[in-house]
Length: 110
Image 1 (cartoon, helix red, strand yellow):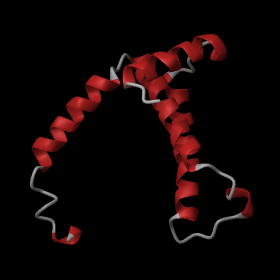
Image 2 (image 1 turned 90 degrees about the horizontal axis):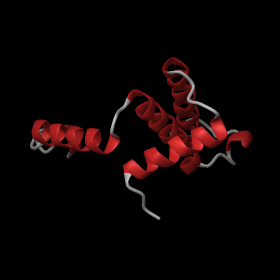
Image 3 (image 1 turned 180 degrees about the vertical axis):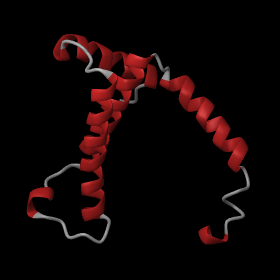
């Protein structure tokens, strides 16, 4: 099932209203985002990096950790009035204009 970002934002908003009572404030959600990114980084460094994976980390699901990050990002977008569909398109357009040939010219990427 593929959901447009606007539907994802709406689903998170409905979940928060039904199960979460209310959004945590923006600073709390930023701290939670950092925690979730840290958990993702732990999985990445152990599974794909040079750190050995601890027994306790082997059951961690990469998709679940990525989704935890996405969920909190959507919460922050919702509570600050950011339309992620629009913001994503604008950001992609900016990157396309800025980097059209930049990466192709980068000798480090060849």
